[in-house]
Image (cartoon, rainbow, N blue to C red):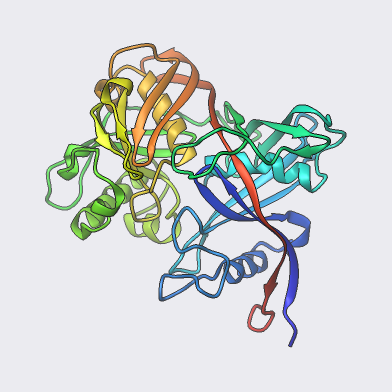
Length: 389
């Protein structure tokens, strides 16, 4: 039996990689679509390597993106993101990927999904993030009607330069007839998470960019400047981190129990560790100067610690750092709250934010950061049709 051929583009966006599709090239039925995507990426893989698929066997490289023309008058394209579990037959559609958001604009322009874009300068692609109901403005440089391929913008966590793509994430819109989502779903700036008989862990639970659970690195016996290879070699820490993530998911109303959070929602909420600004050596050997940072942060992604920083995690850090009384705000260096510069495992990231409110009633009007993106491969993925139905 011949394999199916599906048009696809393999792209880097920020510090992630994923397989991009025009939504119309996949089945309309969600269950059938997910079976196709799992097989394309190479999941579930009991060996954890995704050898027989396009996935790269990490949370940063086991991702899929579906893009289509938007029916909304204020957007050009709709963007749906799926985080593909490596070992389980699960695609988590519950959140966004801020890194791959940077690649949606270039992909849409390359595939002709944006009507009458300018041929020179910067094209603002208006993206509807369908997972969470959020509008994203991606400012993509173009030359001669084509996405600019080369540039000198360096992004920590990526080895090579590329053109800078500015992203602006606007306040998520509530579903029709529904109230706006609460920034603090428990109504508290700081909660206590309990796991077994261990002492409670103070945490800030926030929904900004992506649902995120912030705890002090010291709660896991860490400094907050450790590199992922060190932390990922500590199984007791990883088990405890996932247990806390599960407890936070339940407290936020995102899962009925911790098992459900681990099994069905591996992508969100995220668990992030924060600590006061300090100097440390990044993954590429550079010395990061704590005097140039507001705080340091590490984030877990679908089990292990992330090699850099998730884009949506950066948005959550900016929001939590701007609001007095949160654990993140209390640990950051005092200063202006319209942006935050934090250290992560691969370097540092600055995120701008516009926010308003008081007490526990806050609105994140917009967040801004710069990423880059590049097409790595364009063509067809092959899909064995046998066993998919």
